[in-house]
Amino acid sequence: MKPNLRSTSSDEPAVHEPPTRPPCLAGLGLKAAHVPALLERGPQHFLGGAGFLEVHAENYMVDGGPMLRHLERVRAHWPLSIHGVGLSIGGEGPPDCDHLDRLRRLLTRLEPRWFSEHLAWSSHGGHWFNDLLPLPYDPPTLDRVCDHIDQVQQHLGRTLLLENPSTYFGHEASSMGEAEFLAEVVRRTGCGLLLDVNNAYVSGVNHGRDPWALIETLPASAVAEIHLAGFAQDRDAADDLLLIDHHGAAVDPAVWSLYERTIARLGPVPTLIERDNHLPALAVLEQEAQRALDLQREGALAGIGRPVEGRDAT
Amino acid sequence: MKQPAGPTAVRLAAPPQRAFAAALLDPALPVPHGLCAWNGSDPGVRFGVHRNNVVHALVAVLADTFSVVRQLVGDAFFGAMARRYLVEHPPTSPLMHRYGAGLPAWIADFEPAAALSYLPDVARLEWLRLCAFHAADAAPVELALLAGLMQAPGRLAHTSLALHPSLAIVRSAHPIVSLWSAHQQDEAVRDERLAAVQMDDAESALVFRDPSDEALVLALSDADAELAAALSAGALLGAAQQAHSRADLVHVLTTLLRHGLVTGVAAISISPETST
Image (cartoon, rainbow over all chains, first blue to last red; front, side):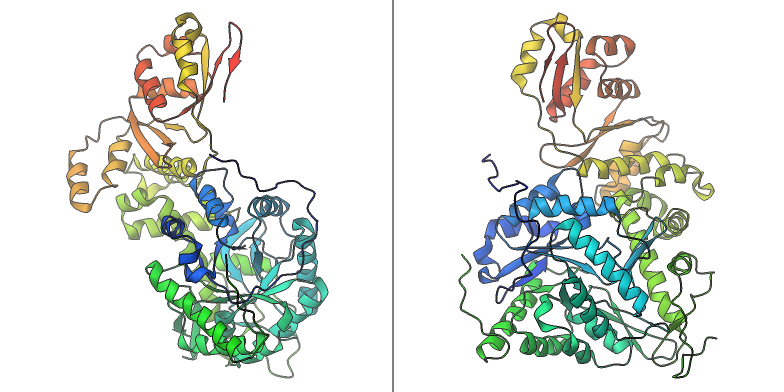
Protein backbone atom coordinates (compact mmCIF):
# COMPACT_ATOMS: atom_id res chain seq x y z
CA MET A 1 0.00 0.00 0.00
CA LYS A 2 1.30 3.45 -0.87
CA PRO A 3 1.51 5.66 2.19
CA ASN A 4 -0.90 8.52 2.41
CA LEU A 5 1.12 11.59 1.56
CA ARG A 6 -1.45 14.03 2.83
CA SER A 7 0.14 16.34 5.35
CA THR A 8 -0.96 15.89 8.92
CA SER A 9 1.40 18.49 10.29
CA SER A 10 0.03 21.09 12.66
CA ASP A 11 1.69 24.04 10.95
CA GLU A 12 -1.34 24.75 8.81
CA PRO A 13 -3.03 28.09 9.42
CA ALA A 14 -5.21 27.87 12.50
CA VAL A 15 -8.02 29.86 10.95
CA HIS A 16 -9.28 28.72 7.57
CA GLU A 17 -10.49 31.00 4.83
CA PRO A 18 -14.17 31.88 4.72
CA PRO A 19 -16.33 29.31 2.94
CA THR A 20 -15.57 29.30 -0.75
CA ARG A 21 -18.18 28.71 -3.39
CA PRO A 22 -16.98 26.66 -6.34
CA PRO A 23 -19.59 27.08 -9.04
CA CYS A 24 -22.12 24.39 -9.89
CA LEU A 25 -21.64 21.39 -7.63
CA ALA A 26 -24.27 18.89 -6.54
CA GLY A 27 -23.99 16.04 -4.09
CA LEU A 28 -25.53 13.16 -2.22
CA GLY A 29 -25.41 11.88 1.32
CA LEU A 30 -22.95 8.98 1.22
CA LYS A 31 -24.41 5.58 2.11
CA ALA A 32 -22.20 2.56 2.79
CA ALA A 33 -24.00 0.67 0.02
CA HIS A 34 -22.97 3.31 -2.55
CA VAL A 35 -19.25 3.27 -1.80
CA PRO A 36 -18.13 0.37 -4.05
CA ALA A 37 -20.09 1.66 -7.08
CA LEU A 38 -18.82 5.22 -6.63
CA LEU A 39 -15.19 4.16 -6.25
CA GLU A 40 -15.42 1.95 -9.31
CA ARG A 41 -16.89 4.72 -11.44
CA GLY A 42 -14.64 7.52 -10.27
CA PRO A 43 -15.43 11.23 -10.04
CA GLN A 44 -15.81 11.88 -13.80
CA HIS A 45 -18.69 9.41 -13.96
CA PHE A 46 -20.62 10.82 -11.04
CA LEU A 47 -22.58 13.93 -11.99
CA GLY A 48 -20.13 14.60 -14.82
CA GLY A 49 -17.29 15.48 -12.47
CA ALA A 50 -19.33 18.07 -10.57
CA GLY A 51 -20.30 15.85 -7.63
CA PHE A 52 -19.57 16.00 -3.93
CA LEU A 53 -20.51 13.80 -0.97
CA GLU A 54 -21.71 14.45 2.53
CA VAL A 55 -21.61 12.33 5.70
CA HIS A 56 -22.85 12.74 9.25
CA ALA A 57 -19.85 13.39 11.48
CA GLU A 58 -21.05 11.19 14.36
CA ASN A 59 -21.28 8.05 12.21
CA TYR A 60 -17.54 8.22 11.62
CA MET A 61 -16.46 8.77 15.21
CA VAL A 62 -15.28 5.17 15.49
CA ASP A 63 -11.96 3.60 16.50
CA GLY A 64 -11.43 1.82 13.20
CA GLY A 65 -13.11 -0.54 10.78
CA PRO A 66 -14.22 -0.20 7.19
CA MET A 67 -16.31 2.99 7.41
CA LEU A 68 -13.41 5.37 8.03
CA ARG A 69 -11.19 3.57 5.54
CA HIS A 70 -13.86 3.77 2.83
CA LEU A 71 -14.48 7.43 3.56
CA GLU A 72 -10.78 8.21 3.22
CA ARG A 73 -10.83 6.63 -0.23
CA VAL A 74 -13.96 8.58 -1.20
CA ARG A 75 -12.41 11.75 0.13
CA ALA A 76 -9.40 11.35 -2.15
CA HIS A 77 -11.69 11.69 -5.18
CA TRP A 78 -14.53 14.01 -4.20
CA PRO A 79 -15.06 17.20 -2.22
CA LEU A 80 -16.44 16.18 1.16
CA SER A 81 -18.98 17.86 3.38
CA ILE A 82 -19.16 16.85 7.04
CA HIS A 83 -22.52 17.47 8.60
CA GLY A 84 -22.76 17.30 12.39
CA VAL A 85 -25.92 16.37 14.24
CA GLY A 86 -24.57 16.10 17.79
CA LEU A 87 -23.24 19.49 18.92
CA SER A 88 -26.51 20.81 20.38
CA ILE A 89 -25.47 24.38 19.58
CA GLY A 90 -28.70 25.76 21.00
CA GLY A 91 -28.39 23.79 24.25
CA GLU A 92 -28.52 25.60 27.57
CA GLY A 93 -25.13 24.12 28.45
CA PRO A 94 -21.90 24.78 26.53
CA PRO A 95 -20.88 22.45 23.68
CA ASP A 96 -19.47 19.17 25.01
CA CYS A 97 -15.66 19.29 25.06
CA ASP A 98 -15.22 15.58 24.37
CA HIS A 99 -17.46 15.89 21.36
CA LEU A 100 -15.57 18.95 20.13
CA ASP A 101 -12.30 17.02 20.48
CA ARG A 102 -13.73 14.12 18.49
CA LEU A 103 -14.91 16.54 15.82
CA ARG A 104 -11.52 18.21 15.62
CA ARG A 105 -9.79 14.86 15.17
CA LEU A 106 -12.24 13.86 12.45
CA LEU A 107 -11.97 17.17 10.59
CA THR A 108 -8.17 17.09 10.81
CA ARG A 109 -8.13 13.59 9.42
CA LEU A 110 -10.61 14.16 6.59
CA GLU A 111 -10.12 17.86 5.78
CA PRO A 112 -13.64 18.35 4.42
CA ARG A 113 -14.46 21.34 2.27
CA TRP A 114 -17.51 22.18 4.41
CA PHE A 115 -18.50 21.56 8.00
CA SER A 116 -22.06 22.27 9.09
CA GLU A 117 -24.31 21.98 12.14
CA HIS A 118 -27.87 22.91 13.08
CA LEU A 119 -29.63 25.83 14.71
CA ALA A 120 -31.24 23.53 17.28
CA TRP A 121 -30.60 21.73 20.54
CA SER A 122 -30.49 17.99 21.05
CA SER A 123 -29.10 17.27 24.50
CA HIS A 124 -29.83 18.26 28.05
CA GLY A 125 -28.59 17.10 31.44
CA GLY A 126 -26.26 14.53 29.92
CA HIS A 127 -29.01 12.95 27.83
CA TRP A 128 -29.12 13.05 24.07
CA PHE A 129 -32.39 12.89 22.14
CA ASN A 130 -31.37 12.14 18.55
CA ASP A 131 -33.66 14.93 17.34
CA LEU A 132 -33.24 18.58 16.39
CA LEU A 133 -35.27 20.55 18.90
CA PRO A 134 -36.45 24.11 18.26
CA LEU A 135 -35.27 27.31 19.94
CA PRO A 136 -37.09 30.49 20.86
CA TYR A 137 -35.79 33.46 18.85
CA ASP A 138 -35.15 35.89 21.70
CA PRO A 139 -32.10 37.90 22.85
CA PRO A 140 -30.91 35.44 25.55
CA THR A 141 -31.00 32.57 23.06
CA LEU A 142 -29.22 34.67 20.46
CA ASP A 143 -26.41 35.48 22.92
CA ARG A 144 -26.09 31.84 23.91
CA VAL A 145 -26.06 30.50 20.33
CA CYS A 146 -23.41 33.06 19.34
CA ASP A 147 -21.26 32.13 22.36
CA HIS A 148 -21.48 28.47 21.47
CA ILE A 149 -20.64 29.06 17.81
CA ASP A 150 -17.64 31.17 18.86
CA GLN A 151 -16.45 28.28 21.05
CA VAL A 152 -16.98 25.74 18.29
CA GLN A 153 -15.19 27.77 15.60
CA GLN A 154 -12.32 28.49 17.95
CA HIS A 155 -11.99 24.86 19.02
CA LEU A 156 -12.14 23.55 15.46
CA GLY A 157 -10.15 26.34 13.85
CA ARG A 158 -12.59 26.59 10.99
CA THR A 159 -15.80 28.24 9.87
CA LEU A 160 -19.04 26.49 10.68
CA LEU A 161 -22.05 26.58 8.38
CA LEU A 162 -25.26 26.87 10.39
CA GLU A 163 -28.41 25.20 9.03
CA ASN A 164 -31.89 26.71 9.33
CA PRO A 165 -34.29 24.23 10.99
CA SER A 166 -37.63 22.64 10.21
CA THR A 167 -39.93 23.65 13.07
CA TYR A 168 -43.41 22.57 14.03
CA PHE A 169 -44.49 25.18 16.59
CA GLY A 170 -43.51 28.65 17.69
CA HIS A 171 -42.32 29.93 21.07
CA GLU A 172 -44.31 32.69 22.74
CA ALA A 173 -40.94 34.04 23.92
CA SER A 174 -39.75 34.69 20.36
CA SER A 175 -39.27 38.37 19.65
CA MET A 176 -37.59 38.14 16.25
CA GLY A 177 -38.00 36.18 13.06
CA GLU A 178 -35.85 33.20 12.14
CA ALA A 179 -34.10 35.04 9.28
CA GLU A 180 -33.37 38.03 11.50
CA PHE A 181 -31.99 35.66 14.17
CA LEU A 182 -29.78 33.79 11.66
CA ALA A 183 -28.55 37.00 10.05
CA GLU A 184 -27.53 38.34 13.45
CA VAL A 185 -25.71 35.08 14.30
CA VAL A 186 -23.78 35.36 11.02
CA ARG A 187 -22.95 39.01 11.69
CA ARG A 188 -21.69 38.36 15.22
CA THR A 189 -19.83 35.07 14.73
CA GLY A 190 -18.70 35.16 11.12
CA CYS A 191 -20.17 31.69 10.56
CA GLY A 192 -21.61 30.73 7.19
CA LEU A 193 -25.03 29.31 6.40
CA LEU A 194 -26.25 25.99 5.11
CA LEU A 195 -29.59 26.95 3.61
CA ASP A 196 -31.97 24.00 3.75
CA VAL A 197 -34.61 24.99 1.20
CA ASN A 198 -36.84 22.10 2.27
CA ASN A 199 -36.66 23.26 5.89
CA ALA A 200 -37.51 26.80 4.76
CA TYR A 201 -40.56 25.44 2.95
CA VAL A 202 -41.64 23.09 5.76
CA SER A 203 -41.34 25.85 8.37
CA GLY A 204 -43.14 28.29 6.07
CA VAL A 205 -46.14 25.99 5.74
CA ASN A 206 -46.04 25.04 9.43
CA HIS A 207 -46.13 28.67 10.54
CA GLY A 208 -48.48 30.01 7.87
CA ARG A 209 -45.84 32.29 6.35
CA ASP A 210 -44.16 32.75 3.00
CA PRO A 211 -40.99 30.63 2.87
CA TRP A 212 -39.43 33.09 0.44
CA ALA A 213 -39.43 35.76 3.14
CA LEU A 214 -36.80 33.72 5.06
CA ILE A 215 -34.58 33.09 2.04
CA GLU A 216 -34.86 36.68 0.88
CA THR A 217 -33.76 38.03 4.26
CA LEU A 218 -30.73 35.78 4.83
CA PRO A 219 -27.33 37.32 4.04
CA ALA A 220 -26.72 35.95 0.53
CA SER A 221 -22.93 35.95 0.71
CA ALA A 222 -22.97 33.69 3.81
CA VAL A 223 -24.76 30.81 2.09
CA ALA A 224 -22.09 28.21 1.22
CA GLU A 225 -24.22 25.08 0.83
CA ILE A 226 -27.84 24.19 0.10
CA HIS A 227 -29.81 21.14 1.20
CA LEU A 228 -32.86 19.74 -0.60
CA ALA A 229 -34.99 16.92 0.78
CA GLY A 230 -38.48 15.47 0.92
CA PHE A 231 -41.16 15.85 3.58
CA ALA A 232 -44.20 13.94 4.83
CA GLN A 233 -47.66 15.44 5.31
CA ASP A 234 -49.63 15.42 8.54
CA ARG A 235 -52.41 17.54 10.09
CA ASP A 236 -52.40 19.69 13.23
CA ALA A 237 -55.19 20.01 15.85
CA ALA A 238 -57.06 22.46 13.60
CA ASP A 239 -56.76 20.05 10.65
CA ASP A 240 -54.33 22.43 8.94
CA LEU A 241 -51.44 20.97 6.98
CA LEU A 242 -48.37 20.13 9.07
CA LEU A 243 -45.26 19.13 7.13
CA ILE A 244 -42.71 16.78 8.68
CA ASP A 245 -39.08 16.92 7.57
CA HIS A 246 -38.36 13.18 7.26
CA HIS A 247 -35.83 12.84 4.43
CA GLY A 248 -37.84 9.91 3.17
CA ALA A 249 -39.28 11.14 -0.14
CA ALA A 250 -38.26 12.82 -3.39
CA VAL A 251 -37.84 16.60 -3.33
CA ASP A 252 -41.30 18.17 -3.67
CA PRO A 253 -42.14 20.28 -6.76
CA ALA A 254 -42.87 23.27 -4.49
CA VAL A 255 -39.36 22.94 -3.03
CA TRP A 256 -37.84 22.75 -6.52
CA SER A 257 -39.56 26.04 -7.45
CA LEU A 258 -38.32 27.63 -4.26
CA TYR A 259 -34.83 26.33 -5.09
CA GLU A 260 -34.93 27.89 -8.59
CA ARG A 261 -35.87 31.20 -7.08
CA THR A 262 -33.11 30.79 -4.47
CA ILE A 263 -30.48 30.10 -7.13
CA ALA A 264 -31.70 33.12 -9.08
CA ARG A 265 -30.97 35.23 -6.02
CA LEU A 266 -27.74 33.56 -4.83
CA GLY A 267 -26.15 32.21 -7.99
CA PRO A 268 -24.83 28.63 -8.01
CA VAL A 269 -24.38 27.11 -4.56
CA PRO A 270 -23.20 23.51 -3.91
CA THR A 271 -26.46 21.62 -3.41
CA LEU A 272 -27.02 18.34 -1.63
CA ILE A 273 -29.93 15.93 -1.97
CA GLU A 274 -30.60 14.56 1.54
CA ARG A 275 -32.22 11.18 1.71
CA ASP A 276 -32.01 9.02 4.84
CA ASN A 277 -35.20 6.92 4.75
CA HIS A 278 -36.93 4.81 2.09
CA LEU A 279 -33.71 4.91 0.07
CA PRO A 280 -34.20 4.51 -3.69
CA ALA A 281 -31.50 3.30 -6.10
CA LEU A 282 -28.40 5.47 -6.44
CA ALA A 283 -29.44 6.36 -10.01
CA VAL A 284 -32.70 7.90 -8.76
CA LEU A 285 -30.83 10.11 -6.29
CA GLU A 286 -28.34 11.06 -8.99
CA GLN A 287 -31.21 12.27 -11.18
CA GLU A 288 -32.29 14.64 -8.42
CA ALA A 289 -28.73 15.88 -7.93
CA GLN A 290 -28.37 16.31 -11.69
CA ARG A 291 -31.51 18.43 -11.72
CA ALA A 292 -29.99 20.68 -9.03
CA LEU A 293 -26.86 20.95 -11.16
CA ASP A 294 -28.88 21.74 -14.31
CA LEU A 295 -30.87 24.43 -12.51
CA GLN A 296 -27.66 26.04 -11.26
CA ARG A 297 -26.21 26.05 -14.78
CA GLU A 298 -29.41 27.37 -16.37
CA GLY A 299 -29.48 30.13 -13.79
CA ALA A 300 -25.87 30.93 -14.54
CA LEU A 301 -26.48 30.98 -18.32
CA ALA A 302 -29.45 33.27 -17.89
CA GLY A 303 -27.01 35.66 -16.28
CA ILE A 304 -28.77 35.77 -12.96
CA GLY A 305 -26.97 35.54 -9.71
CA ARG A 306 -23.23 35.76 -9.78
CA PRO A 307 -21.31 35.04 -13.02
CA VAL A 308 -19.94 31.54 -13.41
CA GLU A 309 -16.88 30.39 -15.32
CA GLY A 310 -16.97 27.14 -17.22
CA ARG A 311 -15.22 24.73 -14.88
CA ASP A 312 -13.61 21.49 -15.84
CA ALA A 313 -13.32 19.43 -12.70
CA THR A 314 -10.14 17.46 -13.22
CA MET B 1 -56.50 24.32 26.82
CA LYS B 2 -53.79 26.89 26.18
CA GLN B 3 -54.86 30.03 24.35
CA PRO B 4 -52.62 31.44 21.62
CA ALA B 5 -50.64 34.54 22.51
CA GLY B 6 -52.50 37.57 21.25
CA PRO B 7 -50.79 40.80 20.28
CA THR B 8 -51.21 42.16 23.81
CA ALA B 9 -50.05 39.00 25.55
CA VAL B 10 -47.16 39.42 27.96
CA ARG B 11 -44.09 37.68 26.58
CA LEU B 12 -43.22 34.68 28.68
CA ALA B 13 -39.77 33.32 29.29
CA ALA B 14 -39.05 30.33 27.08
CA PRO B 15 -39.71 26.94 28.71
CA PRO B 16 -36.55 25.54 30.28
CA GLN B 17 -35.02 22.75 28.23
CA ARG B 18 -35.28 20.53 31.33
CA ALA B 19 -39.09 20.61 31.14
CA PHE B 20 -38.96 20.13 27.39
CA ALA B 21 -36.63 17.14 27.71
CA ALA B 22 -38.74 15.45 30.39
CA ALA B 23 -41.94 15.87 28.39
CA LEU B 24 -40.28 14.45 25.27
CA LEU B 25 -39.71 11.07 26.91
CA ASP B 26 -42.83 10.91 29.09
CA PRO B 27 -46.13 11.38 27.24
CA ALA B 28 -47.91 11.53 30.62
CA LEU B 29 -46.21 14.86 31.38
CA PRO B 30 -47.91 18.03 30.14
CA VAL B 31 -46.61 19.78 27.02
CA PRO B 32 -44.12 22.54 28.02
CA HIS B 33 -45.65 25.99 28.46
CA GLY B 34 -44.94 28.83 26.07
CA LEU B 35 -45.43 26.95 22.80
CA CYS B 36 -47.82 28.26 20.17
CA ALA B 37 -49.17 27.64 16.68
CA TRP B 38 -49.87 30.28 14.00
CA ASN B 39 -53.50 29.18 13.67
CA GLY B 40 -54.18 29.08 17.41
CA SER B 41 -54.46 25.29 17.43
CA ASP B 42 -53.32 23.15 20.37
CA PRO B 43 -49.49 23.09 20.20
CA GLY B 44 -49.55 19.69 21.94
CA VAL B 45 -50.23 17.93 18.63
CA ARG B 46 -47.26 19.73 17.12
CA PHE B 47 -45.04 18.96 20.12
CA GLY B 48 -46.02 15.34 19.48
CA VAL B 49 -43.93 15.42 16.28
CA HIS B 50 -40.80 15.61 18.46
CA ARG B 51 -42.06 12.98 20.90
CA ASN B 52 -42.59 10.72 17.94
CA ASN B 53 -39.22 11.59 16.33
CA VAL B 54 -37.27 10.79 19.49
CA VAL B 55 -38.97 7.49 20.24
CA HIS B 56 -39.13 6.37 16.63
CA ALA B 57 -35.46 7.14 15.94
CA LEU B 58 -34.14 5.51 19.11
CA VAL B 59 -36.30 2.39 18.75
CA ALA B 60 -35.00 2.17 15.16
CA VAL B 61 -31.38 2.40 16.36
CA LEU B 62 -31.95 -0.42 18.88
CA ALA B 63 -33.91 -2.52 16.38
CA ASP B 64 -31.03 -2.22 13.95
CA THR B 65 -28.35 -3.20 16.47
CA PHE B 66 -30.44 -5.97 18.08
CA SER B 67 -32.15 -7.31 14.98
CA VAL B 68 -32.07 -10.97 16.07
CA VAL B 69 -33.54 -10.10 19.49
CA ARG B 70 -36.25 -8.20 17.61
CA GLN B 71 -37.00 -11.19 15.40
CA LEU B 72 -37.02 -13.56 18.37
CA VAL B 73 -39.62 -11.53 20.29
CA GLY B 74 -41.50 -9.96 17.37
CA ASP B 75 -41.76 -6.30 16.34
CA ALA B 76 -44.53 -5.34 18.74
CA PHE B 77 -42.86 -6.81 21.83
CA PHE B 78 -39.48 -5.37 20.82
CA GLY B 79 -40.99 -1.91 20.24
CA ALA B 80 -42.63 -1.90 23.66
CA MET B 81 -39.47 -3.19 25.35
CA ALA B 82 -37.24 -0.67 23.56
CA ARG B 83 -39.56 2.20 24.54
CA ARG B 84 -39.34 1.15 28.19
CA TYR B 85 -35.56 0.95 27.93
CA LEU B 86 -35.07 4.31 26.24
CA VAL B 87 -37.23 6.14 28.77
CA GLU B 88 -35.18 4.63 31.61
CA HIS B 89 -31.87 4.95 29.75
CA PRO B 90 -31.87 7.71 27.16
CA PRO B 91 -28.63 8.00 25.15
CA THR B 92 -25.79 9.75 26.95
CA SER B 93 -23.79 10.38 23.77
CA PRO B 94 -24.60 11.62 20.26
CA LEU B 95 -22.77 8.56 18.90
CA MET B 96 -25.64 6.24 18.05
CA HIS B 97 -23.34 3.26 17.50
CA ARG B 98 -22.70 3.42 21.27
CA TYR B 99 -26.39 3.35 22.21
CA GLY B 100 -27.66 0.08 23.59
CA ALA B 101 -24.59 -1.10 25.53
CA GLY B 102 -26.77 -1.53 28.60
CA LEU B 103 -29.67 -3.27 26.89
CA PRO B 104 -28.46 -6.90 27.30
CA ALA B 105 -28.14 -6.57 31.09
CA TRP B 106 -31.40 -4.65 31.24
CA ILE B 107 -33.22 -7.41 29.33
CA ALA B 108 -32.00 -9.92 31.95
CA ASP B 109 -34.09 -8.01 34.51
CA PHE B 110 -37.04 -7.33 32.19
CA GLU B 111 -39.78 -9.47 33.72
CA PRO B 112 -41.97 -9.90 30.59
CA ALA B 113 -39.00 -11.52 28.77
CA ALA B 114 -38.00 -13.75 31.68
CA ALA B 115 -39.24 -16.91 29.95
CA LEU B 116 -36.73 -16.37 27.13
CA SER B 117 -33.64 -17.12 29.23
CA TYR B 118 -31.34 -17.01 26.18
CA LEU B 119 -32.39 -13.47 25.19
CA PRO B 120 -29.80 -11.47 27.22
CA ASP B 121 -26.92 -13.56 25.82
CA VAL B 122 -28.17 -13.18 22.23
CA ALA B 123 -28.38 -9.43 22.86
CA ARG B 124 -24.83 -9.44 24.25
CA LEU B 125 -23.61 -11.23 21.13
CA GLU B 126 -25.30 -8.68 18.86
CA TRP B 127 -23.89 -5.76 20.85
CA LEU B 128 -20.33 -7.15 20.68
CA ARG B 129 -20.73 -7.73 16.98
CA LEU B 130 -21.50 -4.02 16.47
CA CYS B 131 -18.48 -3.15 18.64
CA ALA B 132 -16.31 -5.49 16.57
CA PHE B 133 -17.37 -3.74 13.37
CA HIS B 134 -16.16 -0.36 14.65
CA ALA B 135 -13.15 -1.56 16.69
CA ALA B 136 -9.63 -0.29 16.03
CA ASP B 137 -7.64 -1.76 13.15
CA ALA B 138 -4.64 -4.03 13.73
CA ALA B 139 -2.60 -6.06 11.25
CA PRO B 140 -2.14 -9.82 11.80
CA VAL B 141 1.28 -10.92 12.95
CA GLU B 142 3.65 -12.25 10.30
CA LEU B 143 3.56 -16.01 10.10
CA ALA B 144 7.36 -16.20 9.86
CA LEU B 145 7.58 -14.88 13.40
CA LEU B 146 5.27 -17.62 14.62
CA ALA B 147 7.07 -20.28 12.62
CA GLY B 148 10.25 -19.30 14.45
CA LEU B 149 8.55 -19.81 17.79
CA MET B 150 7.09 -23.15 16.74
CA GLN B 151 10.62 -24.47 16.22
CA ALA B 152 11.40 -23.83 19.87
CA PRO B 153 8.56 -25.45 21.83
CA GLY B 154 10.18 -24.36 25.08
CA ARG B 155 9.74 -20.75 24.11
CA LEU B 156 6.23 -21.33 22.80
CA ALA B 157 4.98 -22.23 26.27
CA HIS B 158 6.29 -18.91 27.56
CA THR B 159 4.67 -16.87 24.81
CA SER B 160 1.65 -14.66 25.12
CA LEU B 161 -0.44 -13.29 22.28
CA ALA B 162 -1.86 -9.92 21.45
CA LEU B 163 -5.27 -10.47 19.88
CA HIS B 164 -7.24 -8.21 17.54
CA PRO B 165 -9.06 -5.27 19.21
CA SER B 166 -12.35 -6.43 17.70
CA LEU B 167 -12.20 -9.85 19.38
CA ALA B 168 -14.78 -10.62 22.07
CA ILE B 169 -15.91 -13.84 23.71
CA VAL B 170 -19.47 -14.49 24.82
CA ARG B 171 -19.86 -17.44 27.17
CA SER B 172 -23.38 -18.75 27.39
CA ALA B 173 -25.42 -21.66 28.71
CA HIS B 174 -27.74 -21.33 25.70
CA PRO B 175 -27.41 -22.15 21.98
CA ILE B 176 -26.84 -18.49 21.10
CA VAL B 177 -24.75 -19.05 17.99
CA SER B 178 -27.30 -21.43 16.45
CA LEU B 179 -30.11 -18.98 17.23
CA TRP B 180 -28.14 -16.06 15.84
CA SER B 181 -27.00 -17.94 12.69
CA ALA B 182 -30.52 -19.13 11.89
CA HIS B 183 -31.63 -15.50 11.73
CA GLN B 184 -29.00 -14.65 9.12
CA GLN B 185 -30.88 -16.89 6.66
CA ASP B 186 -33.95 -16.49 4.46
CA GLU B 187 -37.21 -17.17 6.22
CA ALA B 188 -37.64 -20.76 4.98
CA VAL B 189 -34.10 -21.82 5.90
CA ARG B 190 -34.34 -19.88 9.16
CA ASP B 191 -37.43 -21.77 10.32
CA GLU B 192 -35.86 -25.08 9.38
CA ARG B 193 -32.70 -24.19 11.31
CA LEU B 194 -34.64 -22.92 14.31
CA ALA B 195 -36.67 -26.13 14.48
CA ALA B 196 -33.38 -28.06 14.70
CA VAL B 197 -31.85 -26.00 17.53
CA GLN B 198 -31.41 -28.01 20.73
CA MET B 199 -32.45 -25.51 23.35
CA ASP B 200 -30.44 -27.33 26.06
CA ASP B 201 -27.14 -26.90 24.17
CA ALA B 202 -24.63 -24.48 25.61
CA GLU B 203 -22.70 -22.51 23.00
CA SER B 204 -20.17 -19.80 23.49
CA ALA B 205 -19.21 -17.41 20.74
CA LEU B 206 -16.11 -15.82 19.30
CA VAL B 207 -17.06 -12.45 17.83
CA PHE B 208 -14.63 -10.45 15.68
CA ARG B 209 -14.08 -8.50 12.50
CA ASP B 210 -12.05 -10.48 9.97
CA PRO B 211 -9.54 -9.08 7.45
CA SER B 212 -12.32 -8.70 4.84
CA ASP B 213 -14.24 -6.47 7.30
CA GLU B 214 -17.02 -8.98 8.06
CA ALA B 215 -18.17 -9.05 11.68
CA LEU B 216 -18.24 -12.81 12.24
CA VAL B 217 -19.63 -15.09 14.94
CA LEU B 218 -18.14 -18.56 15.51
CA ALA B 219 -19.35 -21.20 17.96
CA LEU B 220 -16.91 -22.44 20.60
CA SER B 221 -17.24 -25.01 23.34
CA ASP B 222 -17.33 -23.46 26.79
CA ALA B 223 -13.86 -24.84 27.58
CA ASP B 224 -12.40 -23.35 24.39
CA ALA B 225 -14.12 -20.05 25.11
CA GLU B 226 -12.57 -20.00 28.56
CA LEU B 227 -9.14 -20.64 27.06
CA ALA B 228 -9.63 -17.97 24.38
CA ALA B 229 -10.62 -15.52 27.10
CA ALA B 230 -7.44 -16.39 29.05
CA LEU B 231 -5.27 -15.85 25.95
CA SER B 232 -7.08 -12.62 25.25
CA ALA B 233 -6.20 -11.49 28.78
CA GLY B 234 -2.51 -12.15 28.05
CA ALA B 235 -2.00 -15.59 29.62
CA LEU B 236 1.12 -17.52 28.55
CA LEU B 237 0.26 -20.36 26.18
CA GLY B 238 1.73 -23.04 28.43
CA ALA B 239 0.03 -21.82 31.58
CA ALA B 240 -3.27 -21.35 29.76
CA GLN B 241 -3.16 -24.88 28.43
CA GLN B 242 -2.53 -26.28 31.90
CA ALA B 243 -5.27 -24.20 33.48
CA HIS B 244 -7.79 -25.16 30.78
CA SER B 245 -6.93 -28.78 30.16
CA ARG B 246 -10.38 -29.60 28.74
CA ALA B 247 -9.85 -27.04 26.00
CA ASP B 248 -8.36 -27.71 22.58
CA LEU B 249 -5.44 -25.29 22.35
CA VAL B 250 -4.58 -26.25 18.78
CA HIS B 251 -8.16 -25.64 17.64
CA VAL B 252 -8.33 -22.26 19.37
CA LEU B 253 -4.94 -21.15 18.00
CA THR B 254 -5.78 -22.34 14.49
CA THR B 255 -9.06 -20.43 14.59
CA LEU B 256 -7.36 -17.26 15.79
CA LEU B 257 -4.64 -17.49 13.15
CA ARG B 258 -6.97 -18.39 10.31
CA HIS B 259 -9.01 -15.22 10.87
CA GLY B 260 -6.04 -12.90 11.29
CA LEU B 261 -6.76 -12.34 14.97
CA VAL B 262 -3.24 -12.77 16.34
CA THR B 263 -1.70 -9.32 16.04
CA GLY B 264 1.37 -9.75 18.20
CA VAL B 265 3.44 -12.31 20.10
CA ALA B 266 5.66 -11.82 23.11
CA ALA B 267 8.00 -14.55 24.32
CA ILE B 268 8.77 -13.37 27.79
CA SER B 269 11.06 -15.84 29.53
CA ILE B 270 13.98 -15.82 27.15
CA SER B 271 15.01 -12.65 25.29
CA PRO B 272 11.71 -10.76 25.05
CA GLU B 273 10.52 -10.28 21.53
CA THR B 274 7.46 -8.37 20.44
CA SER B 275 5.78 -7.60 17.26
CA THR B 276 2.66 -5.71 16.35
